Image (cartoon, rainbow, N blue to C red; front, side, top):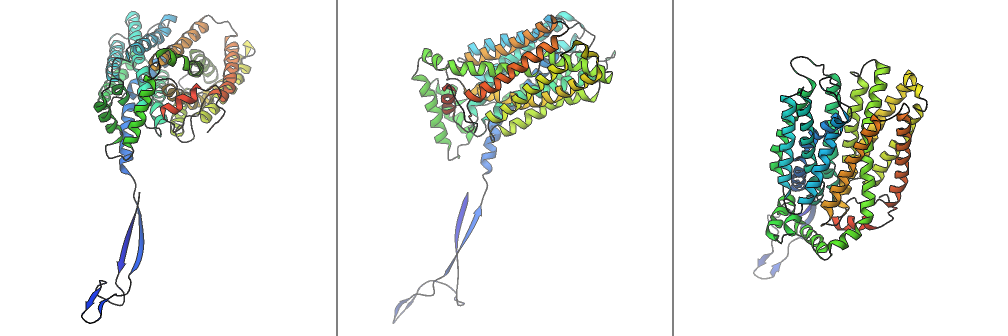
Length: 494
């Protein structure tokens, strides 16, 4: 904001510059004063405060996603403890729980506010963590804990993806939505590092440590849910305009000059949905659904059991153990890539930045396939050095790619069908993880070659497909972003 002050100073040593009345000559004007413009530029501290309030909604469940990332890594091969046998059912159980939780939340979201899902999901995760702590050697209880914790993260994920898009302004929607993948990436890093560095002893097993960290994160997450602010859209759909405006002012600030304009846009978004029937919204959602089904499905390829098993095997051969720096770096670079992406989604944009990450993922995946083209290469140090180095680079670019999927899911679909379609896509992502686990367990000696070649080709075709059809939604309203998703071709990258 720029303020201009007019300053006047006396000239010719006059005491004042007012007109003085002379008894004989009337009014005698004095010399005209000089004028000086002083420009003072002031920041808008309120905008940062309101951005923090919008980010509070995303931060409210951040710690719950961190524990979810630990469970994700635990399911994808980072359970080196000898306390229990990691059977196929044990590995799949968490993903099955997530699938069930996402289905349940997608069915109930239209009737309930977001906070009950966050609280119930956090309580389920806390329950799973307590079981891991209290019964670290009981396979049956650990299996039940994984189902329960998975259901908890499923209950949280679908509401969060929609909620974060609705409460954030157009300028900060990328930062808000990316919190999901940043939290998961941090949890993956914690699980990978402590699982390979911790040595089991009689005082604390790896499973106990997993549970203790989970309890801390779950309690923090449950406490942070008090920061959550309900979406104004939820109240507008129930004709509760006063409550909607109250929530809107909490997010933007009552003294924000654009609060009325933003509220009017939110009202139009709800009114536009009311004008269409459910069938009409489903019909216009066909193209966005196809795009997002593949896009989010590729997120499952970015962190999977085959990738983890490949890194573990190659590191053991080249370094002699997995408690070494390549594994630590492998766990951290995904988080670094996600943080970089989070900072650029609202500045550079979603599309170009993410496609660069996906292209690099495809190239690196094909390069790893070359290293496995001969099954005997798994015993050759040179090729295994290449595998873990390529794997580290792959995780860095995977972190760059995955964040945009969370933002896109909150923008892609019309209002009334959004929970059902987002829930289905999140469930599809878990199904791919389950297929990866089953395929790996039944794989032949050349499994890694077949897997990396197949997935690398799929990712490369995806780059071409998404370059043509995915829209750039940076700084667009939800209505504008939805219209772009409904177009078949979106060639623009900016």
